[in-house]
Structure formats: structure tokens, C-alpha cells
Length: 631
Ligand code: ASP
Picture 1 (tube, protein in one colour):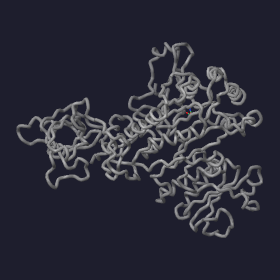
Picture 2 (spheres, protein in one colour; picture 1 turned 30 degrees about the horizontal axis):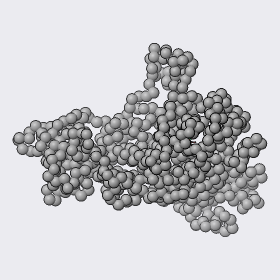
Picture 3 (cartoon, helix red, strand yellow; picture 1 turned 90 degrees about the vertical axis):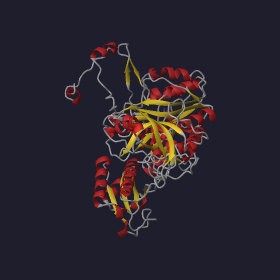
Picture 4 (cartoon, protein in one colour; picture 1 turned 60 degrees about the vertical axis):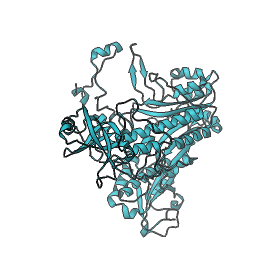
């Protein structure tokens, strides 16, 4: 129950950075959170009644008269209590003499988590009673006066990080959950990183922080947008999925280097680690190319990276989309470990194994494999069975597991470098499909191996990767004969592929780049089209979009739009990875639940039909759903 003095370390940078291997918890003293290179400690007690924070008091404060405000964390036998604020814990001695009866009454009777103000003297703890695990463990407060600022009712859960509580309960009482060390740490680290990003962008590189509207117009293509009714019958605003159009228009407006900590909205239904509203570090620059944006982002992350982590090494490696798919089966490869996909089609050209032969006889037929180190030791029969079932159910593909200890003599890439205990998972079929399946199995097997104690992914490692040379278009999922933008419709084609736009658009590569960290997409951007004709052709002819919705953009491009490009970093996901949090909800102060609800205020909520009238809206209640029963 010790509150380490992490915050002072966070600001002062006094202790040596220590590599952190697990998430910080209350009382983990081997941790140093030196997040800022700021020389000065912020003044945590300016403008308020307290003189000091609970966590900052040390032997150097002995004899000082202090006033502290905090929550009662713990009380022992009416002799002392432990007071907590955002900064740490401090021990307060409850006076026993008759003259202090009223102070004693307050401190002994106030329920746990009540908020109190105490004044008294910093004294040293009696010899032998120091607590080396507690940063304030050498001192205690001899109280003279105390005031109960507000009593606390019985809590739905204890404010202790080790107490297990469901996420629903945490979200329902978010304001209490925020008192935990973990949430305090995550939100303060987030604030520090954002501050450093602002510093880097505005002070060091001349960016301008500009707010763009959240009431906007529908954008064709891309994610589903939230609608906001207006008082004009049948007319709606849309909440922007990103400030994409505005940031490009700012370039036309000569604002040259824009950035914003931008709130974005996407109505994508329930997905476990997505939020309907989320935050991007949104950036746009004029007269820039892909390498310019990449260097800017590498510098930005290096500059804002917490000091207690291994420094970010730049430049980040880069991989083409085609290579990422072929070797990792995904456009966001986790490059912290091997188990790469290999093509072994040639080995099996003359095979008699039915399904391999079958696959190879088809156009684009391939045989691919991944090697699972020591798989025979760690994977159980039921794991292999579920792998085969998953492959059949989700990919309509067969998987052949090969246990190499019985089969060591093949002169093939599969066995090169393999060990006795390795298992090879082999599949055959069309290139993309076989790779995607093996990419999924690679991650699945890594998870399985790790649950059985194998360390494949070093938790202190941050493995950044640029993925480049995406195709400009992908076949639409629901109708593969039609095209959709791989990034968004404003992305410029690769200069050497422009001619293909008019002949073989599927083959056009784009100037789109994604930033991947440990297998998660944490950013994406592109060089934009700044030629109205080209933009119109892509929208109208290739994407078959209604260009009227974007006439303002097309018009703007015609008025001397500079060449420009940009990127957006997903701030929530980035902070989630940096803090090692299990979910992005743990780095957002008031997140929505997995179903998109605010469980604290019960949002979304119904609106009386009277109040819908000005918007000319009526609810048409579903007849057979749960929603109907609820009303
Ligand atoms: N607006 C894009 C997105 O949200 C990022 C960009 O292209 O700059 O993904």
C-alpha cells in the first residue's frame, strides 16, 4: 500500500532510468518514471490551501509546518492514518492527548476515502519504524488541526490497484477508478507526451495548432460517420472521421505546417479495442515528400518518448506492403519475432500430397509455411486441432502440421535451420489467402507459446516499422469488382504508376505510408493529390463516388493548391502501447464501453419525442428487438 514517489521522479529526472519489464503497480520501487527532461519541478501547491503534496515530503522537510489535503487511504488502531493524493502517501499521527480530542474525533471517525485537510509538523519516525519501501517512509506528520472536507460513503470498490474489479464497474464509477495509481500514471504520461509533441512541432519546427470543426458534412468512402440532426428538415451534420479535408484546405490557405490534437469520430459498431471517439495527432505539411513526413515523425517520437524507456532508434526500418504480406501475412507486421512465412512451392512441384498438388495446379497456386520453434514441445494436440479448424472455418484452407523430428532429411528451406522440436505449419492456395492465414496463425501460435512460458516478444522492445508502397485501390469487400481506396480518396498515386490509372488501376501503387509499432498500426498518411483533374478522375471514374459531396475540395485544388502531404498518429493506441496497458480504454479518462456506451452517465440515452420535434425526427421503434422491449 505504498505510494511511490513516482511523480517527483517524473518531473525531476533525478533517478537513473531503469528498464521496465512489466506494467507499473502501486509500490513497485524498481521503477523510475523520468518522463520529462524539464529542469524545474512544477509547483504542485501554487494557488491552493495546501503547502505541500502528500508524496513530496522527505527528511529535508523535518520541522516544517505543513498543510496537506488528501484522501484517507488507511487507518490503524486510531493511532495513525495514511493520507493519499495524486503524488503519493504520507503517514499522519493521530494525536492522543485530551486537548486534541476534536482533531482525534475527525480523524478517527471519517470513513476511508473521505477527503481531509490536516496541518501539522513534519517529524522523523521513531528509530526502527522507518519504512524504506515508502518514499515518505522516514517522516510522519504530527497533526495540530484537521478538517473533514467531505465524508465518503461506502465505496463500490476499494481504491487499491490489486483489488480485482470488473471493467463495467470501473467504467460506471470512472471518477473513483481514476484515483488508482495506474490511471493516474497513464493519464499523466499521456499529458507529458502530448506536451513534448507540441513543443517539438510548434517550438522546434514552426507548426501551427489549429482547431477544425466537428460539425461537418458527410464524406464519401471510408468509415461510417455519426450524424447530428439539424433544425432544417431532413438535413444533418456529420461528425468528421478525421480533419482530413480541413487540413488539406489549410494547405490551400497557406497555413503550410498544421497540427492538431484532433478528436475523431467513427460509427463502426462494437469492436473490442476501438472507440467511437478517439484522438489523433493530426499533421499536414506543404512542399513535402514521403521521406520528409517520415523523418518528422521519427523525430517527433524520439523527442516525446518517455525517458524511462529505451530510446527510440531512428530511422525506422521500412517494408513494402507486398513484402509485409508475403513474409508476415499482414500489413501491420509484428517484427519483434521471427516465424516468418516462407514460400516452398518449388519443393512440392512434384508432390503426391493431394491438396498441395491441387493448389499448385491452379493459377497463382502456392505452398507456404511457418516454422514454430519448439512447437512439438509446447503445442498440444488440441492446439493443432483448433488451428486446423480455424483455418477451415475462416479461410477454407487446409493446414498440414509437420513434426520435424521424424522427418529431418528434406533438403528444403523448411528444414534449413530447424531444430528437432520444431513444427512446420504448411498450407497451399492462392498467395494472398495463404499468407493471410499463416499471418494469423503466426500470431496465434506466438500467443500460445507465450502462455506456456516461452518469451518471444521482449516486453521492453518497441519495434517501429514503416509500411510503404500500398496499392492505391483495393477491391471492395462487399463487391470485389468495384474499387475502394486503400487509404482515402485524397491519396496520390506513385508518380511512376500514374499512367496505369487509365489502364490497370488495380496495379497502381500509392504514396501512402503506415507506421506500425509491435504489430499495431499507430499511424497512417499519404502525399495528397493536388491536381483537381486527377482528383476528379479518381473520385468519379474509378471510385464512382458522388463528386458533388466534394465540390468544395475540387474547387480549392484549382486555386493554386500547393503539393502537400501528412499523417495522423493514433494517440490512444500509441499511449496504450507505451504504458503496456491491456486496453485503449485504460489510457482515456472517460472512454466508452466495448458497446459504445458511457456506463457512468448511461449514454446514449433516449430523448422525449417532444424534444425531437424541432429536428423533424421521429423514432421508428424496432418491433422485435430488445430495444423495443426496453421501451
Ligand atoms: N486522415 C487520415 C486518417 O485518419 C490520416 C492522413 O492521411 O493524414 O487515417
